[in-house]
Image (cartoon, rainbow, N blue to C red; front, side, top):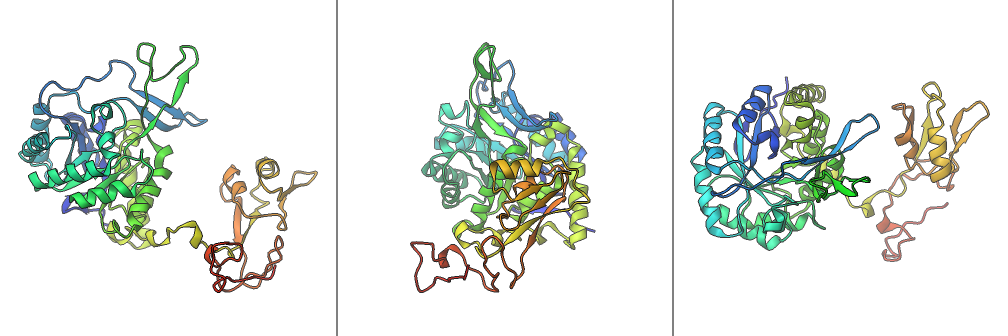
Length: 440
């Protein structure tokens, strides 16, 4: 039986599923419900310094992108950090951690970019018994305009400086939450490491406008006739998040840095994919806001069943297993050839593969008078578009040509050895002595 128990930075939790810092973790009531539903940990919604709390809008805070079946693909929010008094949050955190000692309670923080406010709030958080802190360097709206959030996260020198203050004034494990609104995620990750961060979490939300009201001519969500950019999250951001997690995991300077992955985790498979790329656990927000806290039960049962099927006894068994197989394009095998194959028994003759290939790809699918669709191997480049647009799962698959077979498109005999762009004669920068010429 798979053991989903998770240890992250020495912090134990029953499973690797944590709720991210967001509306679901804004108060004691929510967090208690979350733990009772099965969540392994929470990152408490971001706290600010003492004094008058921030003021949120009193109108729509969320915009959305939907699929054809109205399934929520992406959520945009313009909500700020907690608008409840600091002392109230601290009291609630203390009670929750006391009553749930075996669950992870991390406190997200965002205060002005000065050392004293950080020292002060860290001292107060330590008194709650919380397991660690997460530095919110990612919020792209509202707080960034006040010199916090992404305004810090987009400047590596600030990340290193503030992280250093946190490590100077607190013994709590420090997780730095990174913004995706930057050209190279490795720069802030390496800065966090230099500052002494114990881990990073990513991604925070992506700066976005999800829709425009064409009657009012205003972005949505709309407040009194006007709108603003907000933070985008949900299933649609998962590919962006996975790439950034993988980049940190395979980068030599940051390869040992623990990662808590965030971005579109909706199912157990999403979590397993992030963890295979190097994340030790995952944080979830949109799925909980869409389906409620009990969605974690499906995540737990699904991950446990998959681990049993694969023979993994703990989550540590598969963390990072996919990382060595993530590479740069120039290292891909250019002599690996596949061809599309259509299963005629499964084909429903919709013609979607033909339309996509004929109009936008390589004219490699033929349609007969009775609407039988076949692949023209002398034209097929195996781009995979037909597989992706086919509405019948596994109706179209890719067959790998074995060494010795002939690629009908190029005439090349598939070799035993591989050739990357670095050995390809068409590469003007390649070393001529390293180039491998194939007969084709």
